[in-house]
Amino acid sequence: MKAVNLFDYLANNEYPGRGIAIGRTPCGKKMRIAYFIMGRSENSRNRVFVTEGEGIRTEAFDPSKMQDPSLIIYAPVRVLNDTTIVTNGDQTDTIYDFMAAGKSFEDALRTRTYEPDGPNWTPRISAIVKGDSYQMSILKSADGNPESTHRQFFDFTNELNGCGHIIHTYRENGNPIPSFEGEPVLWEMEKMPFDEWSDNVWKALNKDNKVSLFTRAIDIETGETKTRIYNKHEEE
Image 1: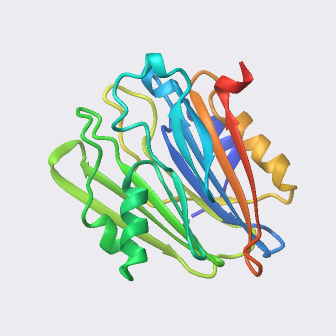
Image 2: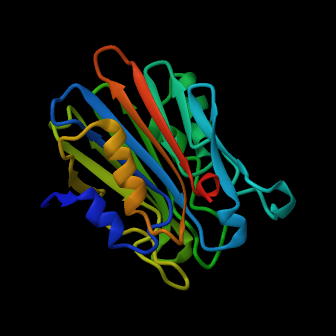
Image 3: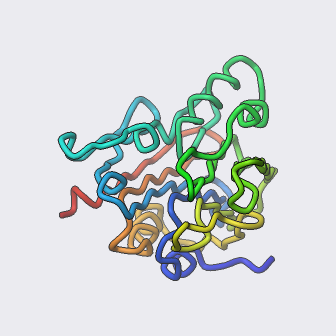
């Protein structure tokens, strides 16, 4: 698989939905994470990221406009010891609880399925980062058929310097919206400071549909982190 330019990849997709990008810096010393959310409806767009402990959660920007919080209010990022958990839904808590009990990432997600939002049946995407390795997963319906759930897991061990992967909920815009297909996409991390990299991810997301972005750099040796949060509502 040929590595893509992450910024171009995002800029060329009007609506990838929610996405997780993880990679190792060219120097090999840090891991970087990006988690973004997009929205087409007023309810989906009425959100911001706020910090919560070592992670983040979503909350309504205007509580008076909140309609159904069930699929849009959750904690996308939580940290359990030296493991960072990132997901697009409340399966973050499922993974955290299972791993805290000594069970695995896969064990947790085998108890979950795609989101109950037919006809889109939005996939649940999840990832964990520990040291220089990470796992990703997508839970989705069988080509839009809700009678069957496909659970796919991907394990990236001792990831190469300057390499990363991205997975997102939707292949592209549509009605219904088609789910992501295939393996997480390989992307090459250019040599640039974390703040510049984060700014470029935010700029690459479609200006009409983007809602919020979380980025984090994690020092592989020390565990020290640096975090950025972007909210479209706070820029307007």
